[in-house]
Length: 129
Image (cartoon, rainbow, N blue to C red; front, side, top):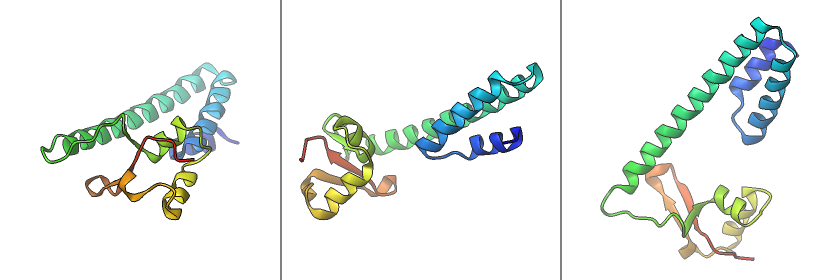
């Protein structure tokens, strides 16, 4: 794979798996690069990190603004995203949680949908199975 293809894949990676693979590939490329190439590749890595930090900060600001409204409070120890639920209870994917919701294993009173956050679903953080 050429350096340009590697950089493109790195910059376009969006899923956790794609990002992890591209980071490993980028680290390998940096190890085997000339000093000039190393500097160029490092600049790409720093730019991507800055972009990800900006996206994270923007999302956190959105969440803060929603949570700051007087009519809306959520205990984030009790309510978690599907991704966080999967991590806490050692589920391999968030698809398991989605399927549990569809099948009614997770009762509707244990699900909150936040329309102001593009329909983000929060799940009560208790073990269901």
